[in-house]
Image (cartoon, rainbow, N blue to C red; front, top):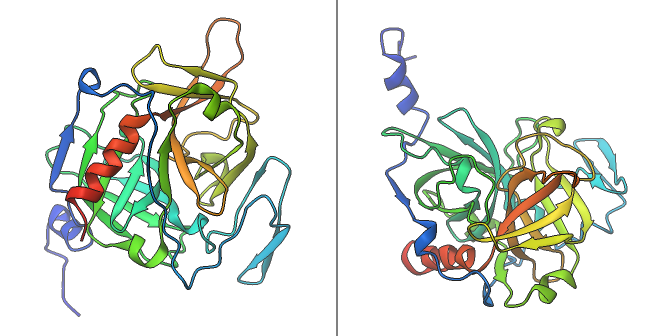
Length: 286
């Protein structure tokens, strides 16, 4: 075997990690108004089994059986569209969540990305579970989005170009924004991601209804009741409609509390998010 004992650590890392190449930071002041309808289409490959997480009663992985609790559950990550959701690791030591939204496109929270680093990497692992990588992974080549400096805002999203077209094999979710608040309020949602309390396992929150929509801060914030504090790591996870054609309408930015109001989950949403995905589809297709 090759003796690598004298190779510097930073060179050894290059043998395992594909460094990113470009970052494009956008100014929220230049973003279009969030309140108009737009969308991109999902894709479910012919081989995939489409499943609704709200009707899965139990499933088995490597001989282990998992049951569905009422609010939060560990979904079967091998079924569509759950297989499009994955964990994000960055060279800054951060961990987040993300979702495939195109053949080689990852959508995540802007604050997950390592903004400003001259040397950086981001790795996306779809269907990750306790170290298992059933579909491999891909590093990010470039990303474009909003640097929120860890603030919870309605513009907290970034689109990433992957080196590998994972979506071509696994499929991807569509994305959508709506012109009126009523179009958001009259739907129920699912959220997926990798919260810290689940360790290295995926989680899904079911039957979510919007409590408030805030358009005062930069972008559009969709606010939900915090039914259980699952810890960090869920940031960037998609908020999506569990229909036959799943559409992500936002990504988790974080939590916020105003005065005596209860703490709420905040998802960054609106047409600027869909615009980012459309940019990737138009300019970064493999």
